[in-house]
Image 1: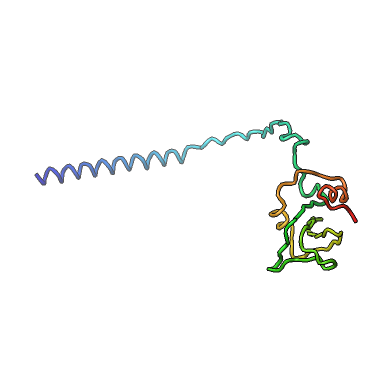
Image 2 (image 1 turned 120 degrees about the vertical axis):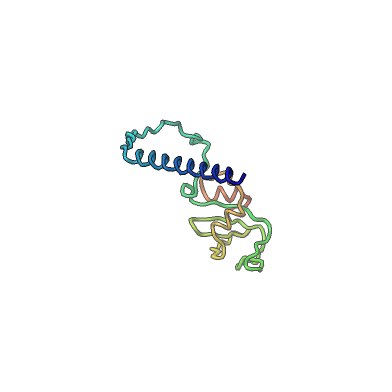
Length: 148
């Protein structure tokens, strides 16, 4: 009984070795045959209409001189409520950006550069910008702060 099992195992092992040798020979033949190189294909760029249309695109930050928003609640910077240095007002601000600078304007029209704020803060707090105004004064009127 054990003799038959050992003969069968030797036979299976011989079959595995034969199959392995055939695979190696096949691989060696394939390596020797030249592999055809694909022809270079000319890049064809499809012509596509602009999407979305130009009148529906939002302007990028580079296309806009500045952005502004109204902030009615107090502005807390570094754990302290920020107040206007000239009149002491601490709420109802107009916050606007010009380039990489953030400026604050109080109800009385006092404006000051705020170095503790940056455009990333402005973007996080401003929400979507749905309107564009041609001038700074028009933007102030739109937000309820007439120029004084």
